[in-house]
Image (cartoon, rainbow, N blue to C red; front, side, top):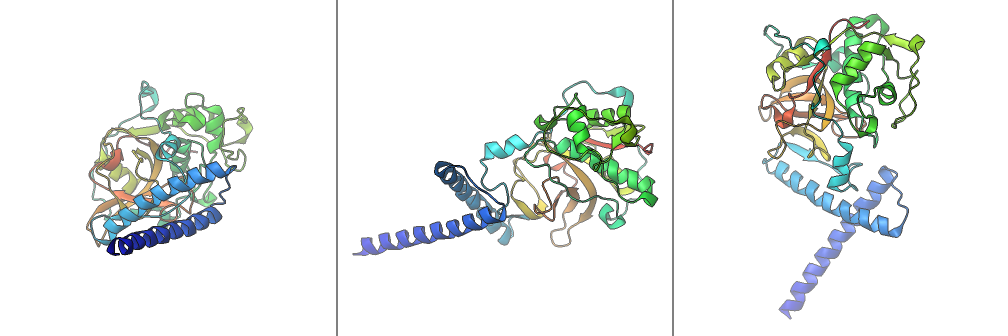
Length: 330
């Protein structure tokens, strides 16, 4: 009799859990317009979704217990396997010879930095964009820093969005949706100039280069690469000059929703995702120093398209690949 009661209890718990997952699944599909071609694919995606929900709920239990500094949430990546998610992360850590003729490693003075900086408050950051399923983070990271520096030099023109698609189609050193690096993308813009987003809109796939010299809106004179791992110089650049292209190892970032991201599992030397550092601050509740980072996964991801990550520890290699334009951007 007791065995039957125990079995009945676990069966009820299992059905309740399945019912909850099914409700979450329906909400997820409706919210993200998910449609699957076959019954088999839907069952496969649902199974992956359930596994990801377990990961999310465990992280949030740790957060509620004060054992973690960030929360997770179900988002558009929730029906992807880990391998599929990692395939989107296409930033390439520098392996080819550096383009030394155009790269400087500055020895900036270390004046008194502001306690906190957020270039969004200065109106110097464009809207959050969405790279889609194309591995073009490197292009968004580069246009992001160029857009901000251009605004800071030409405030009378307002914010202008530059073309990522120009890089995907025309920068043949990088590999479009299959990945790229920021320095060669900067080099391309030095050589050819920068077209606006509205003149060369994003489609998220490599096509035939439609470069139009007469449509070039801005000229980049030079760019500066910070010495890998030099987080102090990165802090000085972000604090005084403007939003800066950075990269990190983002393998655990998929379901981030709020808080300060930390990870004991990520690499401190290699990177797989390029983003934009737009500021920094200190968290009053935890005392953690953090970076404010603009992502390119849409405004419905993370903290309205942004995330915060621990600063001062080269967390997830955040200071290993940083580049920004010189002031010669016209």
